[in-house]
Image (cartoon, rainbow, N blue to C red; front, side, top):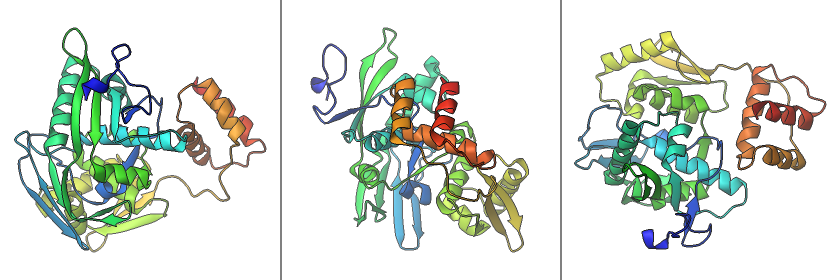
Length: 332
């Protein structure tokens, strides 16, 4: 892998050697639908060496750990970063590849992590767990149902180190299963606040709410089914208590949780319903936004602006382009 890396810049030119360079500033977080729907990641904070078996509505999954343990929900940040970069590039009409070059510092900052030496060590451990965890499943990605076994990533490699041995840039090759999901755009946008959720169960419950509630007003699920889909190893009574604690704290971005009779949990949109279509931004305004913030994921920027517009009550805009660019200039 390193033989394809240029000696001068550390990276090959884009489109050569089947590499993609993660260089899109402020890309909107994206998550693949399959791993949002099904529990592929451990919610534990200690090494988890259980073999997980899950079956629901015809989907069968077995997750097998390496000696390092199962990949965790926090390790998934790496995949979210990679998927986000690839989707932003596809939306911009750029060439993409299953192998990505990324800067470790950019990944840590994008995922709201500290950039201490210990953070780089934990990042390396996350790569090891992602590569070592093996999944056997028949779930569909990209319109194909194939029973197969694979790792969450095929491989990773430290391309460049700092003088103290800390990783600077990394090459990572995604599994073909995940890459198919990206190419078919089987992904959903996450709130940027997702990375501020520190408790593993909160992250997992948010994923499920985002996947099933989506743009609907609400979504309901039994505690028993929620426990199964979450992948939590806790007994039901303990899980129910954790869910009630979440209802009291309301930590999820975008969604409010309530408990209903019959052991049912309801998820509802926090933002008020906005009447009328969202404002439309012209391609000329997007080009100007790219000029103002070079390298920005302009579609992600536009989505952030629309979210702010919706939270303000969705007022009618006579000049959407001017409103959008005024908001962009404030950000710069």
